[in-house]
Length: 294
Image (cartoon, rainbow, N blue to C red; front, side):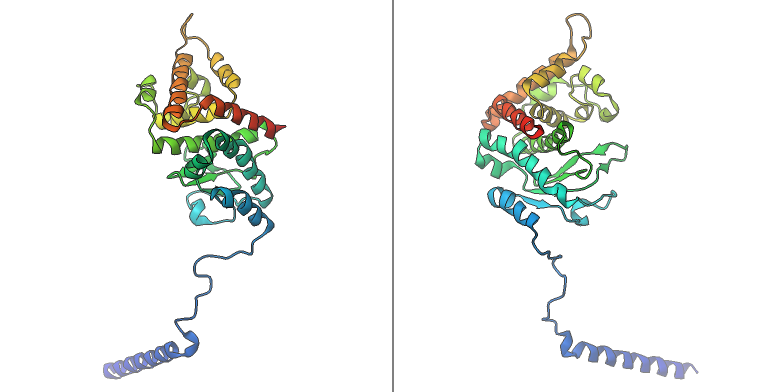
């Protein structure tokens, strides 16, 4: 019985092998035939694709990704694709309120070299494990993710400031990764940084010398949040923020003093490291933002 079983198994193996061999030998399975879909999905170019190419890729070598791609958008959060009618308005806000002012003050070469080259637009917000909303993120100075574009009011002051603040923040990181800001910046608030800064209110953060609680989490975030806030507001608006910080005691205002000191370090850093007149840049970004709102 066992011998017969072995014969049947051997016969089945031989038959299967012959079938496999014959199948692989068929000419219609030629290995030189391209595999359909290998190398990604190809889309027919739309009017939107052409507009993005003409306005961003051609002059600045910027790639704008709005079609769903889980490999770029991540697998760790539940996200929604961008609505196509929001894509060009968001990118126009970036061009007029961010790229154009830097191009005018810092020059086209600076823009081409240092502004991130890939923008991934995502319809919904991402959420951190602690429940905080993630407005944007960057990857090694190359890729910038902008979240929540389906939900942002692109004609409101708040919506426009949110988009511009996100890219100002990420560019600030890009700059200090290339040329580090002076160590004096970190020393201003030495001993006050707190990894749990996100749980600290804005009012308390400013009393401690940080523009936001997020800025308290590390010196790099302190730098980026302050640069972004300064460039997302006029000098008068930023001064009003500092003036609103209450005194610790008569004539003593630790938060305002620290933020003023950091502000001056940033202005000097932009001039010495990048040959950029920060006040002129701040005026241009404020003018551009006001024009977008109106």
